[in-house]
Length: 476
Image (cartoon, rainbow, N blue to C red):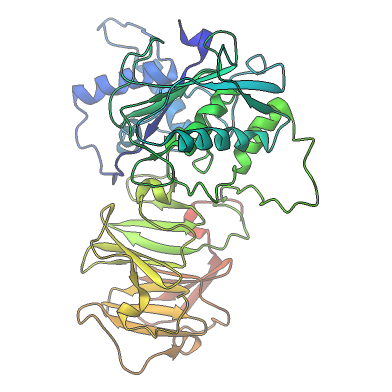
């Protein structure tokens, strides 16, 4: 059967994170890989010229389309950012709709609100009850926000048939072994329409993030079973790449709620008296009221953290890249308090509450997380507000309330004579420091939606800017 009939979609894992480096020379292998990618996901068609190669204008146009979808700098050329994105493990459905949520079309939805499902077989990775609970909970994610209701049947043909299989499993879309493709599902329709298949070569889990949480994979796949295609919002459940989320606290993001309600409408049975958690919204880098959680450098890049995502700004690209924290560092916390890069150890340190995580590349350093008191900070501290690595002195400043501490990176000890008052060192700062960064000869201290720019040499305050100044916004 072909894609036009069934609209197959598969979910894949982000097995590794990568740092972008320039492509010094585009090889023929790179070109072939890119051409194959664009044919598969962006409908690049053969357009032969005199040389027999694909038409340059067609390839360039499709590269621009792909770059626009993923929020890359639109060059129409095979640059480092684009090649990096192409090589990430991903879903098998074409990314032809450039939008937040998107659907397979109004004609590819269920014309009834009462749907049946059947679990045909089980994975040996989990108990029967764990699989049953995971599947039921995944369907309820969508039922909570729509009129859709799901009933399980144990024989016969259900609207949504659920099965586990390996390699070739009877639908012309074979799985690929461990990792890579985790599952796939079909858009609403007769026969195989609505069905969801899970790759039994994967290690599925009930809660643990050491494998793939079946609830999360299934909730994504059932979005396809109900008529949703992929979203380009990295915080959405329907983003093509798998990322871990605590299943006990999972709340369907706003982008997914908007998408499914565009097809079926809201849940008419919602009790206004029940205090349901608000669907999370992916932060907007250009929101003038944005208050960042933390900022840091990383091997020449700048990282800006907010909630469960961070934005990356680096020399090779004119475009900001937005990434889920846990897609880059799977063992990292979200909603962090502070971050900084230790240039001595080539590590990035993330702080949340009374703990600190250290990452070398994208690997958690052995022995972490550790208590923040391991730096010599008072054990009574519940958290720090910001951290700043000072290049000149090789000291790291930890901001707590109206004071700050100084840590000697070389000696691994706190300096004597601290804490000191923030406003005695940084003139003009009268409110709490929320983030800090040092780059290009200046120190930037963030306080709420503002950023204070100080000369690194003299300590003089130069300017007060919005704290998304580096986020390439033009709305102020």
